Amino acid sequence: MMTKKMFVVMAMVSMATSTFAQTAKEEADKWNDEAKKQLELFQKQQNVQTQNAVEKKNVPFDTLAMYTAAYAALDAILKCDQYDAQPNEKGKVKIRHRQANAPIANNLRIAAIQGGEHFRQMKDYKNALTGYKLYVNSYASPLFEGTEFVKSDPYVGQIAYIAAFLDYQQFKNYDEAIKFAELSKKYDSDSASVSNADEIILFAKKDRCKTPADSLAFINEVMEMHKADLGNQRYFNMMYTYYNEHPDKKLAWLTEETKINPGNKMAWAYKGEMEMFAEKYDDAIASYKKAAELDPTFVQVFFNIGTCLNSKAVLLNDKLADKKTGTITKANKDKVRALLEEAKSYLLKAKELDPNREKVNWAYALGRVYYSLEDKVNYKAMEDLQKK
Image (tube, rainbow, N blue to C red; front, side):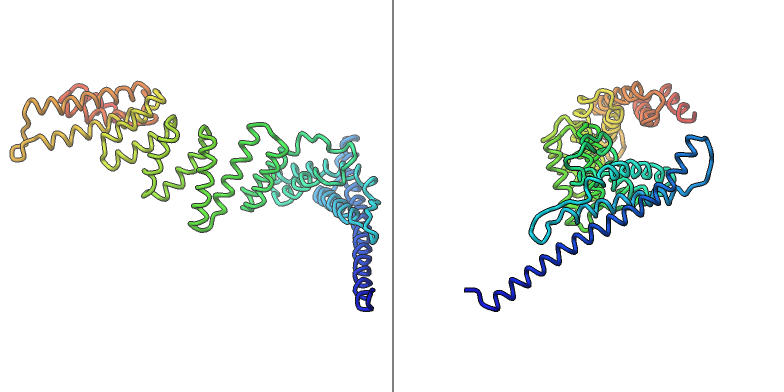
């Protein structure tokens, strides 16, 4: 048996549903009227533009007003359709404006992308971004369901990438940059395009970090992506940047990296660099040689092996020399000389790979070795070379 109180509650629910449905219908009509008004403003300016092109005239027209009206018209149509698709008081959906608005919206999408390009050239990135986002967001709108429009859009992925790029670079809006980069990947599966979108996602996530905990969570995420795709140097570079800011953990990370990815020449080279600065020359030489095996043209590691061997020779000479007189026996001198000769061979390899000293200054390092070997002719040649 229904009580009076229950009847009142149900009546209130029915009234609320009816009011909501009526409001949705009114909102749909309101936005449809707004779309018509903005479309008229857009077409007024567009007609002048078209007439200029056809008749080769130069009648002034308001480009800003034209594209701003196009944006507003497209946005109004999307909002109209959103309200129009809501159920009425009987729970049924009766869409009234979609059939007429779909072809108009399709044309306005073209205006949106044209506006985006126009404003980007003018460096008006805010208005450019508005156009690009409208173009992308409207692509998946229910407005076009059951129509021939935007079934296959070859540009939407590219435009989503541009939107992501502008959000990241110009506005530092990292969440939006990530959102549109993900859309770019969704709509454009080309490997190069996906790679570019992934780069924005990574850098946006990195720059979004505000606390040490954020940074640690981010680098752990990058580490997992790196393990899943060891060939992607971008992940390694990001981790290297992170560990540059945490030098106490850097060598441990590089050591682990050479284990999980022994084919990464940069991991071996950076590991060798840290070991060289710590004066762990044998470890550094071993790491550098691994890098040289992976890339026989890696001039920097040949140079650094030579430098490490020369430093080893200096330390050995100091260790073996008589503490009072500074003299050294022939046998011990031969040990030092063997290291110097080995250092010379690696530095000469660096010279062969980089004859113009564009990457490393092998002339100075080689000059030091020649001096220690008492090779006056070649030492003088290196000194003269450095003066040029």
